[in-house]
Amino acid sequence: MLHEKPVQHGPPGFHEDGTSRPWTGEKRRRKCLPPSSSDSPTTAQDHPDLISHDATDMEDIIQRGQDHKLWVPGEDERWGPEVDISEEDAISYIERLAPDDPDDLYPRCMMTYAEFEDVRERIARYRIAYYKKVAKPESARELKGPEKYSRDELWKEKYFEHLEDDESFEGYFLREHSMLHDLDDYQRLVVSYTAHGSPGSKFLFWEDYCARYHTYDMDDVYVKYYQELSKRIKWLEGYWNFNGKSEEWEKMNVRAWRQALKIALSFPKMTLRLVSFAFDEYIWELKSDVSAKDLDLVYFEIWRLVAKQNRSFKKALEEVYAMDKFHSQKHRMAAELEGALFIWSMEDMFKNLKSGGHISVETEEHEARTLFRNIVYKHKHMNMAEYARQKMEIAALMGLAPRFQDQE
Image (tube, rainbow, N blue to C red; front, top):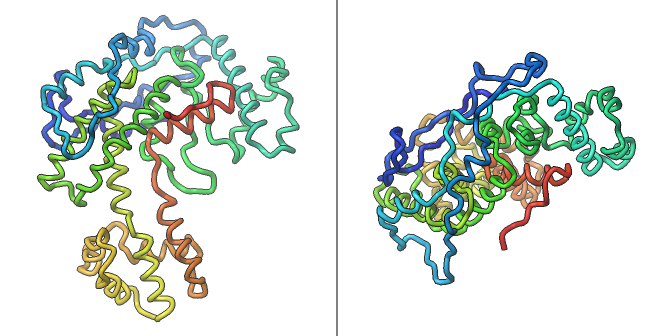
């Protein structure tokens, strides 16, 4: 069951009254999109007759307003901290984006039992096709081709739902999605919450990503937009100062946001909410990358002093802090030395990294260096662009969608 998850939606300048006004740097609000537990679907068997529904198909909603001519950036188009787009231009960009679909049109309508059985049969064949491509060859050979199974055989095998328990499966079909009448089979597919053998979610906001009901085309354009956004506003990372409260950061953040709006004009189906969500997630990724910069080297130097020179953790930290390097981590080390309270202290994290990487006193230095680097960056959460890309790759292996093509 999907539970409510706080997710940023209100883009800079988007207000409750439905108007769009340029954002001035204030903290963006968060709003819940996924259906609450009280709205969760019942079973298809509870609805033997088709429930009438008047909700417009989501694809039609998103398609409205897509007849505008896409903006094509010229070769001399400039991006960067010196490019200051005016408020008036930013508003005009917002007006040219595709319209956002209202919250109340998210699919809620159930299907008949017969329709549900048809969906289950199709999904069973996708499972078989995927399993035969990703599972161990000796296991895959035990199954016939997906189209060679009769309806009765699929029913007797319980639609091969057990295949989704195999560690080779990185995606599966949510039952509650499979009972929603207005979704296509791609929209019913979700990427696994966690990687096999790893605790916790591998995604930043997994529940929200699942509940967005993106079509393949929407995921495709979102991934390509995020690739372009990441390339064009990469300059912003040079202005992050770890607290986000400096006037320079706020000014550059607004500047980058307006550039993000302009970039979106060359991508079909990009709405204000999608642009805002992509921008918010890029800012999160930027902060995450900057905060982790050189952290593996800091822990490696601490380990070398503790393991090879018998220093205490605090003494080793003092010596590393005194080095004329690792400037991006100076604030973190200073706070630790001053006794600041953290959910996870650097000493706790150091012990965790050693344990998780099986790094001991006997470990060779070159090996320890690699292990610290790998484990520090191993647990970085993936964003919606990575979720969508992974979903498209899984769908292609299932024969459910074409293979994703990167932008040239």
